Amino acid sequence: MTREPLGRWGGKRIAGQQSGDSSAGSSRSRPLLAQPRESGGAVILVVEKDPHVRELESFFLEKAGYQVDFAADGLSALDLVQQRRPDIVITEILVPKLDGLSVCRAIKDDPALKATAVLVFSILAAGQRAREAGADAFLIKPLAERRLVETVQELLDARGGKAS
Image (cartoon, rainbow, N blue to C red; front, side, top):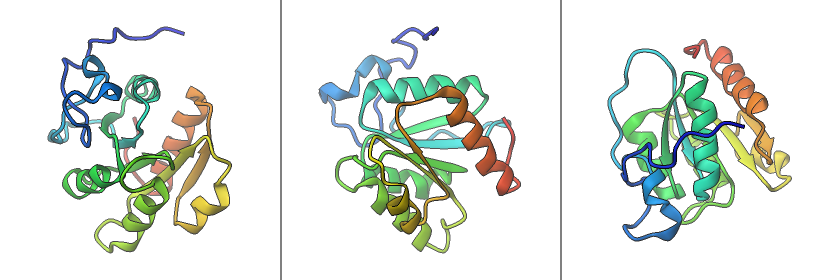
């Protein structure tokens, strides 16, 4: 598998990470503040604490033509959802401050956000719990490029959303 250079994000921070946070992988981090939407691909917010998984998800999703933002914890994710209004939120269950299922519930309980698609992506076999939380889809790790990109596209298609 081909991987992009580790320094491609210019040392910017990921929402929810403190400076000096060793899990931030400062050379691999994304901007703290949301950027304006560019024309083209859908905006996807990835909520993931593992910098290696973030990098891999970003590579697959950006290669498929999507714009990708990141949050390292659930509280930062909710802030970014309010600010950025992504088309899809992909969240791991096991994230700090507010777990991914709680993030999903908060999105689905908010009338202004409930149309946002939520994909729960976890190492835990928790598909039923994800559905109960309101998730639109569930994938179990390990990460598979084709399965991730196809699921994202299916969620967009179901909402009449933007193709990559």
